[in-house]
Length: 304
Image (cartoon, rainbow, N blue to C red; front, top):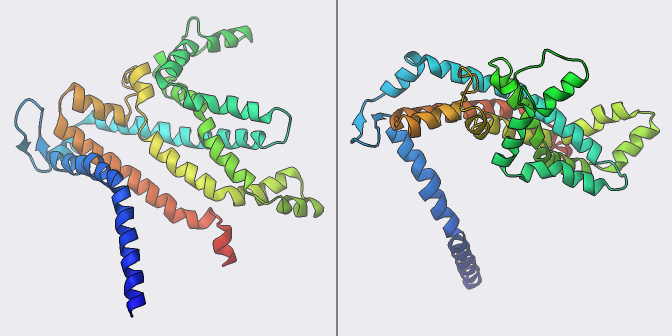
């Protein structure tokens, strides 16, 4: 009995020490994450412009958002358009690059570094580069198109039709971050599986479909979830490169939220926008978790 009490006392002491060491994170989490979330939820029921005291309006902000703000639906369309086309293309490109970077060839580490480098490059500097590439009169992309005989080149960011595809194309520049995750997953697949498939006469494409994709499905699922979250929060590119134009074609949800909060000082309305965005991302994420049972393969769980 005494031994149990002594063991329990030691475990309690270790637990207290662990919580004490983790306390800076807990304090920061509740102070800078949970706290602002609770305040924004409360403020979503108020009319607040920073300069005057908040005025309680109940659900008026949410009602205005869905029934009295036509720009909200434009913003929602822009964001869904970006997500629907950006996420699949980003996942496919990053996976293709990871498969190439998984080959055992001389200098492969240098190529991996070069492909990953854009992911850690400063955002504003990268966007200045892409502004020049997309320049309709002297940008490198249009100059290449002219050189191969295409005269009717797009206006890219200056076109209402091409502005969103331009930003989607630019997002592929950052595929190196997902590539590294895919590469780790690829290197975790046992080589014995490929050897056994080769003995059975399976070609490279069959091995990719029957071995690589199933074994890599948890990694694909992780990148899919992160892709959804990142796509629906696109902000920096539109803010620095187009400011939401032309004709609001790149006015994405996060940028519209920012304008309401800090440009038009509609803090209560911006808080309502933030919680609607939170709900959209949460619902889409939960749907993916529900569908994951149909296509995500977990080796350890299946063995059990």
